[in-house]
Length: 122
Image (cartoon, rainbow, N blue to C red; front, side, top):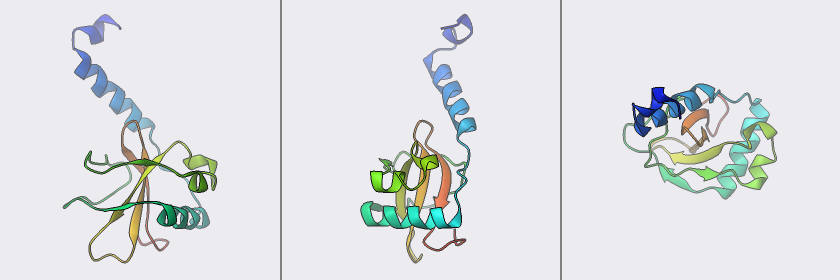
């Protein structure tokens, strides 16, 4: 460990690592067809939880620790190689027709894509 980080302590080092991870968590480039296939695969196999009050999922946001992340099931990960490294969460928003899937970079918990039940809705 360099002297520069040693005197600042482990919390500073962790904060720096999380910032670097968040910068590298880029939005995923999926076609509309890939998004729909991925959404359908996850709806069939995933568990839904209610979105926390006041949380509106947006690309680049950090997922609150109260939301459980899961590894993508093999059936979903095989649809496109660009999502294999991500975790996901499926949220229910009161008053919305259908669930919302969050693709998340697991190290930083940064949202890289938000997929709604209908293309272009979310």
